[in-house]
Amino acid sequence: MEFFKHNTQIDFMAQRNWAALASVILFLLSITSLVINGLNWGLDFTGGTQIQLHFPTTIDVTQVRESLQNAGFKEAVVQNYGTSQDVLVSLSLPKEDKNQSTQSSVAGVDASKDVVVGQLLKALPEAKVQQVDYIGPQVGQELATKGALAIVFALLGTMIYIALRFEMRFAVGSTVALIHDPILILGIFSYFHIEFNLVALAAVLTVIGYSLNDTIVIFDRVRENFRKLRKASPVDVINQSTNQTLSRTIMTSALTLTVCCALFFLGGSMIHGFALALIIGIVVGTYSSIYVAGSLALGLGLTRQHLLPPSKEALDERP
Image 1 (spheres, helix red, strand yellow):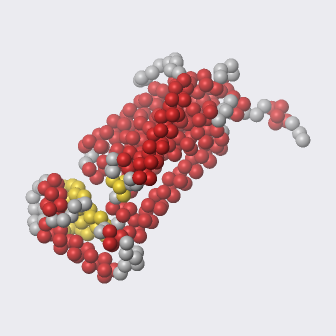
Image 2 (tube, helix red, strand yellow; image 1 turned 30 degrees about the horizontal axis):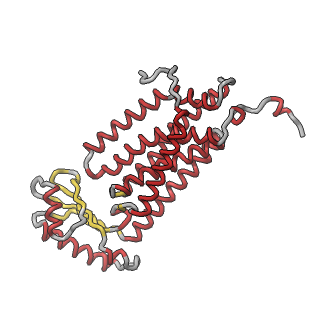
Image 3 (cartoon, helix red, strand yellow; image 1 turned 120 degrees about the vertical axis):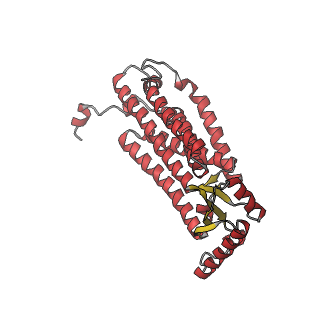
């Protein structure tokens, strides 16, 4: 089954300058939003308290959220947890607690949890506490640091692999594309103040791998066509390679996008951030594999000689 035939002749590289302009504009807008608005860090990074509550009957999450807001928990996050009678309430740390020294005593933490649970049960007297988890600010900062390092190491490892597997111009193009994709995702999360937690971070790392897979498929076909089409220009080779892999790209992206949309609309609020990051990443990653990675390699002067194997004469030369 194919959406496009192998002999399609879409001139992708004809729009590479406009695509580059659009990418630069979106990239700068994302960076600006991140600088001005920052990210709406989730409880995993800021620290706070998670309380699992059980109710004797089926409850409405909206009513629970309104009851907590009326009781003073303005920023409480309420989500269904397991059954229709269980909810998970996430409460961020007060500002004064975030500014305190991270070397707080165990007794102080336990006292703070008891106070929060007591206030929560006053607002929801019919609820029964099942479990209480506390995440300190030091742990949140450590998770944020390790998350950033994970993205950096993933990009470096990708660049080294592409440079060894293909060619340095491909490595630069793919790395720029992989930086381009997460920044756009973070920019959208920042602009719309969507909560960014560990689940969303996992989605960003997944997008890096997904986008890389699509890029490698195109690059492999480019290398193959450079050796076959000896009279074609680099622009023609990249265009033909992209057209030849277009059906595979559309089918893979469309199928994955369908699953992510199902997760977003039917999976519940707990994985909205994960599903949304994947949806954005699939669309942006497919675009960047064609118009960022390939176009940049072409702009860096990629030619047939960079991908052809060394001749026997060159191998037999002696100093």
